[in-house]
Image (tube, rainbow, N blue to C red; front, top):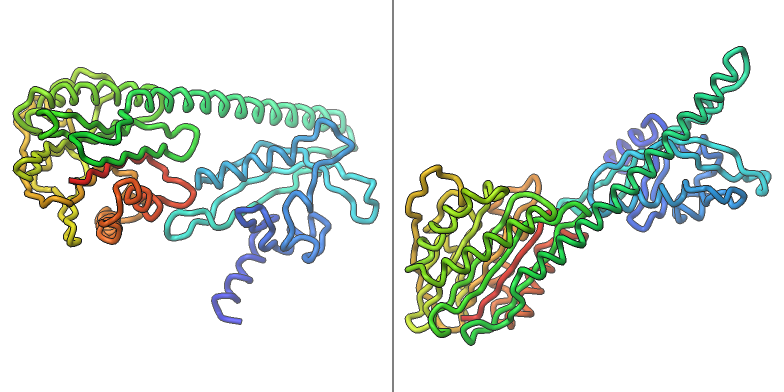
Length: 409
C-alpha cells in the first residue's frame, strides 16, 4: 500500500464523529470505525451497499421522515455541489440481534461534496453526530425538564425542516415561471438571412439559478445583412428574466436603425442606465455583411465571439471590447472592429457560463472552446452546438446559465 493510501486511511479513521463516503448513487464507498461502532454494524454489512438498504425508515412509525429527508439533502448536494447541513433528525435504527426491534435515535447530519477537477461531484461526505443521549436524557430532578427540552428541540427541528421544504417549493415555482418567461422572450428561429443557425439555452443548475442570459438574431437589410447578439444580466429569478427581456428588445430595435454595432450598444447603454436591475449587464453584437464577407462587431464587457474558418483557423473577435453597458455615467462612443470571413466559416457567440469555471483562469476556458470548435468545425450547426455543450459543460450541469449561437456563414 502506498504512503498516500496509508495517509488517507489514517486521516479518515481519525476523523471525529461518524463519517461515511457515499458514491453519487448513494452506495457506501467507505466508513470510519466510529461510524461502525455507533451504528452497530460491521464493515461488510455497510460498504458496497445502498444507503437505504442498510438504514431504512422504521416501518412501525408511519410518520417517519428520516430517510426521505436524508435523501433530499444528499440530492441537493449532488445538484448544487455545495454543503448541506440538516436539521435535527429522528431516524430509528434496526437492531441486528432483534430485527423486530427499532431503537429510537436522534442525529445531527451534515453532507458535503467531493469535487473533481471539472467541478463534478464524485463522492459525498456524510458526517453525522448521534445526539440521542442529549435529547433522551432522563433521571434526577431535571428529568421532566429534559423531556420537555427534547420535545421542544424535536418540534422546532421538524418545523424548520418543513419551512425549508416550503421555501424550496416556492423557489422551484419561481424558477419554472422565470424559465417560461425566458423561453417566451427568446427567439426560436433556426434560420436568419438564409443561413443555418443553431441556438441553445441551458439554465443554471439549482432552483434559484435562473439568470438573465439572452440572444437575438435580426434581418437588417433583406437578409443580406444580419445582426446576431448575446447578453448577460446579473442576478437571478423573475427580475433578471424581466430585465433580460427589456434589454434584448431594446437592442433588437436599436440594431435595425443603427449604422453599426457600436452605435447599437451606445443606445442600449443609455437605456440600461434607466432600467432597474441592468447594473453590470454585458452584451456583444455583430453585424454580418453577407455580400462583402465582413463581420463588424462591438462588445460591452462580454466574452469575445469566435470566428472559425473551414480550414480550422480560430479567431477571437476581441479588438472592440469596452466596459459593461452601464459602466460610464456619461456614455462615450463604443469601439467597433471588422473581420473578414470566407464562405463556409462559422461564427459562434456565447455567454460566460460556457467557459468560466470556479478556480480556473478564463483563458483555460477560451482555449477549451477554441479546441472544441476547431475539432467540430465541419459539423452542421445543430451538431456542432450539441458537441460544444457536451464537451464544455460539466456533466451534472453548470452553475451559471449558458446561451450559445452558431451561425454558418
